[in-house]
Length: 435
Image: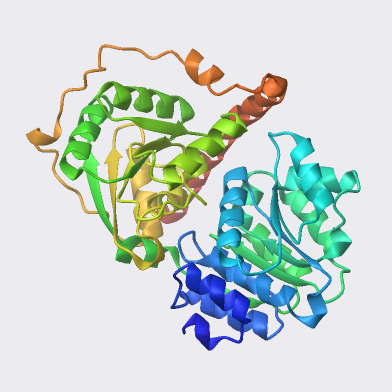
């Protein structure tokens, strides 16, 4: 269906037109149909399917209806980057409306966000920690939200926010005429339990990950030794000559090293991971989105929610430990129905993840030979890069040093725990197959 086929207001349709949207994606069409019926929505939908526009346009429409005229909307997200990107899209789609959206997340000063709340916000986009902090201070009242959106619910649960999400649902459950939209890349038991417990007759939407992976993205796999990967990476970049690329690694230490080696070989780039100071992280994300940065090296913190228009290439320098992360990574290209390309390097350290990934996407990733022309000299091979620069990078706000240190320690522990959990899951999956 086309957006014009729906009974949205002229102001909403104007914003849609200015965003250059014409045809609804499947998740948008199904979301609108359920919302217009007055139902909650429980959707399995990956990034790149148009889900953000689906819930933002639904929010705008609901806030213009009589039931929600004097109410507000709350969007709960797992990361600061995702909050900012949703806010940016809300500003585009809602540019002809009088609704004001604002972001609220940790790792940055309370003062500016408190000022935003004092001036009035119609759509609150928040991470759980900062949201509950403001609630305890009485600066955010859950009773004011008659529309609740939870985006990337599975990621929120993976990050340990299960109890916080339950607090948010409990705090809003008695709000009159409340509408809940829950989006998740996967439908794990925790997400299902939340839907069953707190949502009323939700319309269910399932957009399969395999469709995104196999049909829209050209995939290539190269089996290489771990000591050959940098040389092959340089050869691939030279051959592909992409307008833009994201290179994924499994650890932040490797992201730092690859970034420095690329820079030494003439590829100017930035690197992104979870414990960079907030100001630096947002600066990098904005530079990538605006096309000022051609190459980005990233850990999985950027695998979800990082929207880069017309991204040419994704390279998995490391095979991800979690099969789902393969889909999230390569989903950065081929967004909104466009074609894309993803290249994966499988070395002896991570090749054991390959069978699980291929089972998950229900297809074999085409294997290509590592021909001699792909091996280019790494001019940084004799160098060793210190992490001191990484550890001190971007600390221009000294008042946040202690908070940044605490965040890094927490992220280090979380990274280790997620790796162990993933390894256990892979072992269990293999044991089940052997039975």
